[in-house]
Length: 194
Image (cartoon, rainbow, N blue to C red):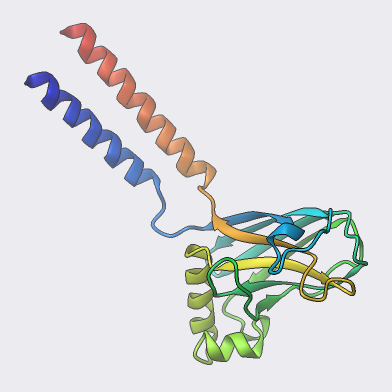
């Protein structure tokens, strides 16, 4: 019976370490961009990657894409907030997006600035305020209800799309690994003492 209680303690400690290492609110979202992710899907062979990171009130967007077949980008955005597999209006547009079929984009958005949001998103999802729009965007990202895509002349609805999903922070993964390593070492030490 004591072995069962001991294992239960180890399990409880491991669960606590994992919970402590998991952020309460995601701060990083990412996704692979493809024509197959668009709704409806398209046959584009272009690929890309979207990486979105939140630090305080600042949202950093990094996009990398290769081989757009529908022409140079006409626009690129984050769309929010709707379940995957459907379309919704633009939340945040990407200013000065490069007009290249292969390239990269980096921009930092101040989420407290109402001018970064489209009027529709600001009013419909944000209740008319930047604070409301910021809260709606972060909630949408955390729920997996946001996507980023690149539009062009051939694919005006979007040539490639990334469904943005929460991604663990490297620091959280490191903390969790350290905790699990310590737990394993503690268990081995206890076993050797028995």
